[in-house]
Amino acid sequence: PSRTSSQVRSALLVSFARARNIPEHVLRLSGRYADWPLSLSLSLSKGTCGGIVVTLIGHPFDTLKVRLQAQSVANPVYSGVVDCFKQTVSKEGIKGLYKGMSSPLAGQMVFRASLFTSFAQSKVFLASQQEGGALSQSQFFLAGGMTGGVVSFAEGPIDFYKSQMQVQAIKAAEAGGSLPQPNMAETVKRSLAYNGVRGPFQGLSATMLRNIPANAVYFGSFECFKGLACDRYNCKASDLSVPALFGMGGLAGSLYWALLFPADVIKSKMQSDSIAKGERTYKTIAGTVRSLYKEGGMGVFYRGFVPCMLRSTPANGIMLMTVDKVRNYIDGL
Image (cartoon, rainbow, N blue to C red; front, side, top):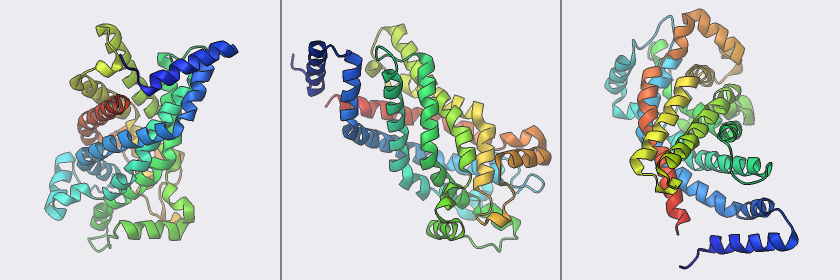
């Protein structure tokens, strides 16, 4: 049977390594780095596909989550998930559920490309530190944590502007309905005018507090689930079915949010706070934790948990399944 160009290249690399007494895994690693531009393009394609799907499906749930997290504990605007949904639709229409979606949708190309490229390169780096290319289960979790740190710089600004748009209704209600609600372009201009290039990175420390352990759990568990399934059914990862990948991705996403939700509440509070530094209530992680606990005890750290979990399983199941299938399709070309 005919061989693909990647198989031919791999065979040539192995022959060259043996002739020069170079460890084969070192030469393969250099070959991977040589393919970095192609790898970036593939990550961009599959990440964008998965990211757009998850945004279109999950954004309404995210709007409810952020609004419940950001509202005042002492004088809440919404009594719960259902009330938040009803008020949002009655006052703003269905489009209110998609408030701020232009930020994550426009940023999907940058964010998802950085997410999956960072994870791929983290795995390559860890593989280069040992003999042989196979990573252990614990190394998948480590690669996920490394990814979380890197992508925080892309995801932080996207979430910041999204949160600012999503909480406008809350701020207007608390101000008696007289507060102006700027559009996305005006919000961007205002943040840059007040804080310069640091403006979009408001709450970055809280983003990293969530992202590093959460992505370790997210990617690590998904890779482990696939490995266990392949061992159980004696197949390759590319042979796993759509329902199987959907279930594994959904479970990985549920673990992401179930274990790290309090950190997300802290992040939402800091990012949805005033753009003007002098008017902020939640300036640091430690200060935010103390203020929130004083306002409502441990329960306040789980506000918005229900819509988040309703979103996490289908959205992440579809995204990781889409990414896996797109990758398999591109690899087969």
